[in-house]
Image (cartoon, rainbow, N blue to C red; front, top):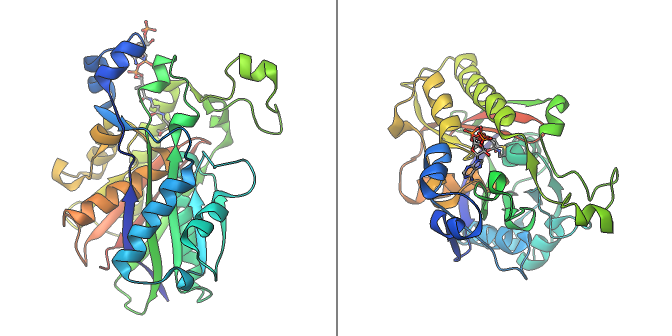
Length: 328
Ligand code: ACO
């Protein structure tokens, strides 16, 4: 049994925060942000809404597109680093908003690689024949964990969600072909939220020291992201005996245009073979890939039978690639 993506959807909040807006908030400018990252603006969710709000909206778009009812869903996997609450899982809030009565579900934290990890995991439930309809969601409200006084991180991130429906197919040529995933905990200290977990629970002191915000050593993360994402993207092509001419497009995690360019170059792809929307949304962590995939599908940039490579790098460090043949 093969796993196909039977539908894809996304949600982005209406409110925009542009590079110009940041010029009023911290010591930065549009030119620095654009040339270093490729980002022009990002979306920000209302303060009183959580990640599940966006996740459920993206999922509803998928249900409408595929014309299936919420009761048909077997499993909901939500990749996120910004759960609505530490407990319970955001999947529970999504289930409630969808009123999906016949499923189970859980959250998965794979950092910026979260959606890829969730897609690989979800595909196993289909391939074993255990489940027929698996919702895989990548969603993050990064604005809830960003210090808007820290110019080195605040300009990079935004809020969004994307979702896909996984279904079985007997067509040997379609769907998920292969994936390669890595985890290296030596990277843990270079991209983290120091407090709020079991090691350093939230306290007056941790809040006063802003330890519940995202910290990163940008240069170190950048270096590892460039080599990690480029190598694994090329590896999955070579392992499956595909060349740059066989690949319709790369749908990369959108953290930095320069990281994406390095991966595309290593794969030998032309610019028109890479799906890029970072200028509009910034880094939305687990949401970047399904959001880019959904837009590419809506714009008819990907069609049935196309070979697609999905690649990501993120906190952990985690990184990897997934190869699939588009099925809808
Ligand atoms: N505006 C103006 N100047 C800034 C800003 C800003 N927003 N942020 C940092 N600077 C300054 C720095 O303070 C530094 O000044 P200094 O030389 O006087 O010390 C200078 O700009 C250069 O800083 P670098 O960190 O070396 O800049 P770099 O070219 O590496 O770009 C960036 C920084 C964009 C963060 C880059 O390192 C990067 O993209 N790293 C990847 C990290 C990432 O995207 N993480 C997200 C999650 S993981 C993932 O998704 C891959």
